[in-house]
Structures are given as structure tokens and as C-alpha cells.
Image (cartoon, rainbow, N blue to C red):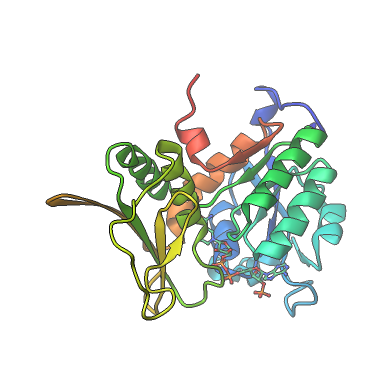
Length: 289
Ligand SMILES: NC(=O)c1ccc[n+]([C@@H]2O[C@H](COP(=O)([O-])OP(=O)(O)OC[C@H]3O[C@@H](n4cnc5c(N)ncnc54)[C@H](OP(=O)(O)O)[C@@H]3O)[C@@H](O)[C@H]2O)c1
């Protein structure tokens, strides 16, 4: 399959897409391997995780806790370079940690391999640099703040509501293992709200925070974002619009990683048809023409 430069044609896109997974030992990486190990279109060919991790050299079936401990014959590599040398992937699915994802995505694009980055924590500057790198190298890339179709709809509904209601606050809630705040989904939501209106939450009184941070973080558009981290939470977000005499609440809850599978499939297939950076599953779901 031609990967360096140019788009993949319809006839070529019926061939299996070779995918290597970064972050195979994590929650998202394991779920990806479990879901796609026997997929006819998305063919997992390699994986890696943290450098020098104890699971390097083990079978990915074992590391990803595939049902029955099935062995796949695919061993976990010690890093990106070793992995691509061993399996020549078309696509890298990255579900690791922001700095590592950034390094992998830039190296991958430079080598004509398409990254699909599910990892959160990339800044707007990172995104701009990835966009220019993808364009320069004529290589498709995706950054997907949320692979869940329900979550993408929640963000789209919020964007639409933002056209009509100028007061909004976002509350995102996650488990206590989450490192970055706000979540990638909350950041993407705020960016989408800013597409509908340049400024939200006009000042009504001079507020005084008695405890710093009490009123949350403020996006340049004025949207406020609050991040909760509690045991028992998985991944949840509520976008609250307030208007005189009414409250509109748009909420999404992920209960397990199964909600990401179809979005991962869409993103991997889509990135094979692109030669630039695409941010968000909404670009696929709501594409016109
Ligand atoms: N886009 C979405 O829909 C979506 C949904 C859920 C989560 N996420 C994001 O996806 C990422 C992973 O989430 P998770 O819940 O799977 O986290 P996790 O369980 O903590 O797994 C993280 C994975 O990354 C590996 N890792 C950590 N640092 C690394 C490095 N420097 N180089 C290479 N690999 C490294 C870890 O290896 P070790 O096990 O050896 O530490 C592990 O395999 C997070 O950024 C999270 O916010 C995205």
C-alpha cells in the first residue's frame, strides 16, 4: 500500500491497513488490541509502550490481556524505531502520554507513516506544527480528542447551542489516573463553542475567588472549564448553558472503552485517505460532499 505521499485510492483501501499501537499496556491500548486482533480490515502488526518496560519482548496477546491469553506471534517492541523496522505499519494508533505522542507523531509523519493520536494533552501549538508537518510531507494524520460517537455528538450539540445561548460552563469528570487537565474533550468542546461565538460569559459582577481555581479555567472565548477527578468515574462531561429561567444540560457518559471502537475504526480508515492533519471525529461524521 503506498504510504509515502499521495492519497490511497478506493481499490487500494480494500487491502488490510497495517496498524502499530503505541501504549499497548494501557487501558486504551489493551482495548484496541482486544477489539481489532481478528479484524479483516485493520490488521495489528506491532506495538510498543514505555521504554525499557518489563513487557518489552512479550506477546501482545499476553500484554493486552486478550481473552484466553491468546498468543499472536507479535512481540512488543522497545520503541517506535524498533517497531516500524519490524512491521512497516501504514498507521500508528497512539494512546500514550502527550510528550511521547508528540515525538511519535512527528517522527511518523517524517517517515510517511500516518499517526492517529488519541492521546490527550497536545497543545494548540502542537496541532499547528503537526498540521504544517503533515502538509509539508503530504501525509495524512489525525488527532482525535474523543473516539466515542456519543461524545462527538455532545460536542456538536454544544456548538449549536452556543449560537443561541451566550452563557456556558463545561464540567468534565474522570478517573484519578488521568494526568492532564482539562481533558482533550473539554478543550475540543471549548474550541468548538468558540466557532459559534467569539465571547461567552460576559462579566456581570466583579468576582473574587476566595480559593484560587474555584471558578475553573478560562478558555480565550470566556468558556469556563472545571475538571473533577474522582475514583469510580470513568469519562463524563456535561456542558451547561444558562439563560434567564432555564438551564440546558448536554451530557455524555462513557462507561467503558467499547464506546471508542467504532471511532477508532473510522479514524484509521479515514487517515488513509488524507494528506493533511484532521482534528476530531466530527470532521468525518459531519463531512459534507
Ligand atoms: N481519544 C479518546 O477517545 C481517548 C479516550 C480515553 C483516553 N484517552 C487518552 O489516551 C491516553 C491513554 O489513556 P489510557 O487510559 O490508556 O492511559 P494508561 O492506561 O495510563 O496507558 C498509557 C499507556 O502509555 C504508555 N506510556 C506512558 N508513557 C509513555 C512513554 N513515554 N512512551 C511510550 N509509552 C508510554 C503506558 O506504558 P506503561 O503501562 O508501561 O506505563 C501505557 O501503555 C491518555 O492521554 C488519555 O487521556 C483518549
